[in-house]
Length: 513
Image (cartoon, rainbow, N blue to C red):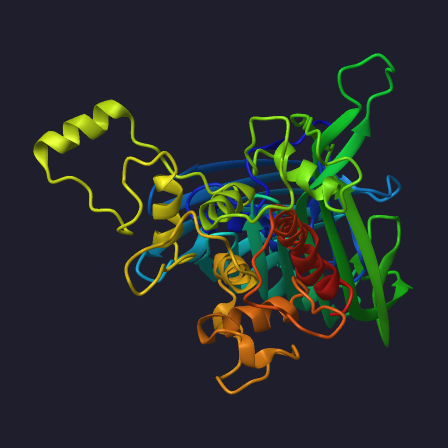
């Protein structure tokens, strides 16, 4: 099987930010799956499910406000005893509307061009018309982007040019998320198939009408995840014992369920490509088919921490993970895990953990600008624009992750409290607005001690499993966080981005719908 040439795996890949994304839609809206080498889908056009495999070529072009995805398929039945083949070419045009004031993007897609021919035995099906409309809303948050969309379409095939038609109505929706640590797009696609055909009688026999209707559903998920794994150093005489690596995995899964007519063998009927012709007998045939493909994993080794004050510490593993990721900075031999973490250190760590890297202006640009226009005004009065970490604070402020104090100050060197830490993380996700109408109970026994500005975030952090209470059920919102405690909280936040979102967007939809 020839290798799949793929610049992109899905339409919503282009529909997210007009930049890189991994929101996924099955190519051609057929519920298919693929890896680097092979594509597979299930076809229902003959009234019986037939699994097709082969190659797919996907190409993409995009501009600031538009994009085009083109697919080409060349498929044959997985069961080589079936005489059939499929060729399909389709392009999808997407127009984007950016709402920077809302932090959202809308993508509207239509079919640009199409061509499809299916041959099963002696029967030929040719796509005469394909109407399609899709619209997605993408909420661009600091830590992750979230997508939801809907689509409708209709395919109209001619059977052997003059014998009849097959109409396939397509409807469904998609949800997805994309962040540095993972991306999942899950789509539910419903098909309603109407088959109407008149077969000319032979040797003076009456014409034979073959009509049937059926339904199918494809629930398909394209998921990418990054995880950290520890690899021990097998050599005894080495300067380090082992280190972490970042492993990227990708899997596409699809579950088809169908309700089709039961077919009997007939002398005149629908060619199934296996030497038999069939016609509906009035009964029904229901079932399900699951298919999947995995991509080859990608492995990246990370830097090795060598702190002398972490051996046996309860948070050693999490601290070393973050240091390996360059989330935490420490140039010396000692990390000082039990000293308070500052507000600046935490914000910078969160921004790095989410791979939010602010663009730094080079000195030449800054000098040129300073001669032509007024100097930049700092977002907080206690952080100079020339501070080496100012770009992180500015970006966090512009993305709504931090707001500072009423005095207009940020207090970058002040210790960070638990309430402040959780508020920063939930704002990065954009989940603070999901809390109930004010008047709710946070679920912690010290609810009255929670600051009003942080209650919604703390409520949501408990709901998603980011934090939990102590043995007395307290959250301790005003307690100062140590560097080790902050490290553990950031790692749990990354686990939410890695695993919890994937479970919600893939397993909970694919296996419970």
